[in-house]
Length: 133
Ligand SMILES: [Zn+2]
Image 1 (cartoon, rainbow, N blue to C red):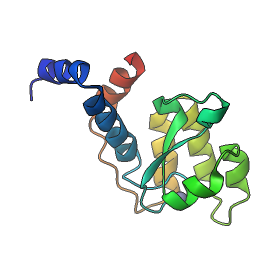
Image 2: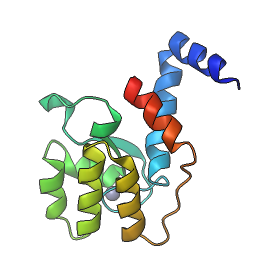
Image 3: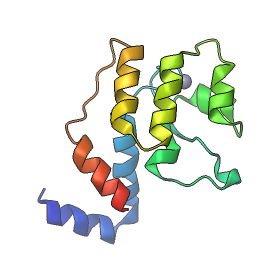
Image 4: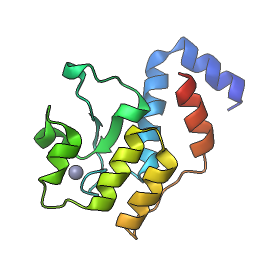
């Protein structure tokens, strides 16, 4: 698909844009939960929407349903510290993610999980694209 067509399609169809965005979030972590490393099945708002959290890449992390449901409206880092799968490298990754440093977040996640594989050749493109959004 030509890049201009993509922009046109997204402008025309917000749902398509949302789907692309959700996909890119999961792609950053190789479709694994940022908290526990299991397959990510959902997107977790780190700062809950009920507390004014926005649906931006910085505030949305890939999470499995178990973590997403268990965390609920608690502060993500505070909740994460209490989990038995707590890993300080993941905690740092979450913090980097919230600061918008996805590159550092991904590197920390790779460190936490040597089997971690990410398809992020489009990272640069995605980041600029979603920052502008
Ligand atoms: Zn999880």
